[in-house]
Length: 619
Image (tube, rainbow, N blue to C red):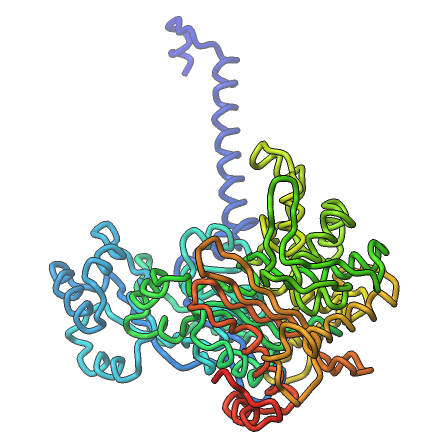
């Protein structure tokens, strides 16, 4: 070493010491890092190693059952079924097309669909890929017996939904389906995973988090490539079944309403006004969700979605239509509350109404003669209500009362897709068409025509406000949430005030009297023939923009004379103008009222009405 320095080397002793110190420091740092990795943070890497050698398989939770308000027979239950998977890496090299072809023929799944799910870049993966769900047990039995012909193919239990009411409650209950990539992006942080089943519409969608339960997990030991090692599971976490839902809907009233409407495009709403409970909600055309879980389920879904008149549309809450003469209930209320026209004053209804240079003709061309407000509503005189709207109320007052009744606003029902409808006003028209509001707009609105659009549920709420003397309860289809094992009630939906419109008690009393007159002396006298109950209501015939095509409406409540609000129901029937005109809405309501208050099914209700003092004449 001394010779090294003596030869005149440039490295001095202090520099050499510094270099040695750096080397020692580096060694110390590395030793400290190794100590930290092996001792201090060893458990972290041990956990990571365990995760590498363990894989989890989802154990799907049983989806919750759904009952009607009677809680005696399920509307929706689960049926044991199977899903078939392919593990690409378990297929021997060179046999992919052979196996794909066999699975395609066996499960009746297009070969292109399998190839799309498992492209060549995934051939090395050990993660199972679902090929088809809803596979029956006999198929699985055959597969098990010939498993040597299907390398890489496996199966697992995957229950499917069974809807016992077929299409009768499809729009209320909805249906389920596999989660899409787009849905997974939104719902991943809420516990959803690839392959999850979730509600797509109706109650299945609205209360998916209650119904889906909590999936369990089965942990297995695998090697670095994801291949299973050994047969035993390392750990099992059992699934938690979904909650049981009890709806406010009565399946007997639902069936009665469905048959009374028949194969006519339209809807029925039966509402309990004292609580907001939906007793029945029917929309036609409908669909059978059970067909979505058959062998040709995806094809069946596409067929339904392409049918005319939108079978997936729930017309009770997703269709807004001119309310026609049913809107005259609101007009009558406004006139009485505002004291805009005396109860005994009359309008001479001569069959037409002149406004500027326009002549509006009444539905009865020769008119009705002098009518007070009770006669105006009973006979549904357009001349009377044109006079009220244009000369005594004005558009601002009409819009104000439409707002009080909830028109133009969603009701907040616990079903997806509800529309708010439309209450036009001068400002709206100016923005939409850049034209001013004119007297003809007010005249049209006064009889429920023009730009005005309401849903059948909103019309049912209009009647409920009259029945409840100024209160509307938020409509809902969920009644109770129960424990799936014990049946214990976990949550009960209580009535919630949606809106209150305080008015004089005399106004409500007189409007009810006027609505009763429609049944006893007015337009509905010939069709509401049921002796089972006294009803009060209003007919409506709405223009649909085509020659000889008219919407048919009828709204009513019963019993008219009941002192107990809990005994009363509101019925709203809408029949679309797309049907052959037959003025069916009040006729259907007549059968529904008979069935509800005599506790009869459709067939018995029709039979009894044919024997009534005023026999059924239209069937």
